[in-house]
Amino acid sequence: MPVKHPLEYELSPTNIDPGLRWVTLRLRNVGEEDLTALDVRLNSLDAYSISVAGTGLYIVGIHPGEETERAFQVSANLTGRLYASVDGWRGGEEFHWESPGILITVGEEVAELVSLFALTEPYPPPGDKIVCEAIVHALEGSDGRLRIEFWSETPRQEFEELGSFETEPMEPGEEATYRVEFVPEEEGSYAIHAYLYDGAKRLGHEIDYVYVTEP
Image (cartoon, rainbow, N blue to C red; front, side, top):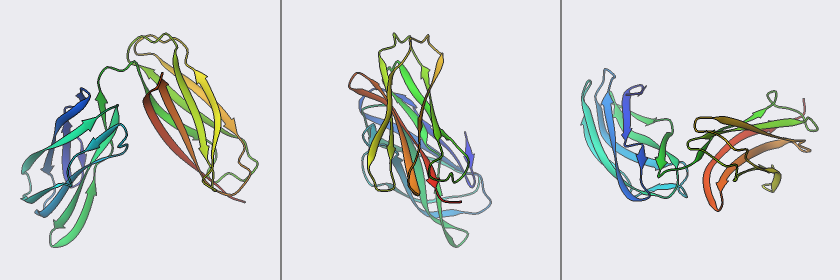
């Protein structure tokens, strides 16, 4: 199981069918102190794709070396990411812990949006060209009818479309890269969004951030 100190964690299964399903979170205390009065939650990074029922679970404590598991009900629509969070006490002090996002594959999908990166120097100035790159990974054979869209959320919270493409045919396991360019005209934080669609079905959504400022 992966580890983020002081907890080792695992969520299973990571491939489920659409609908109401149960997943199990396993936690193991790999630290040297008792973890007590724990509020354990499973959270969604994208509730449109997959949401979690309920408000969390209470665990009295987990001793060093001890493992516990809890079941959570989820409503699964599309592939998305979940993460676990724990609030409680460690060695007499309050602590908060979160796992990284854990990918949950929902149903059989032809492709996934692996990543989105804004290829730029840190804190680019206004007027500099910024290249955005997204990678699509084929899970099954694709005949090229997928669509990938790029959008920019400006410091004024306006959405501007940067580009839209139909994907090329891909074999299972193959990856393809798609790029757009834009020139920010004002200072502030830009959120760059990439969406992957199969018809009206959204297969993936990734976000990257760029902070534009005068040198």
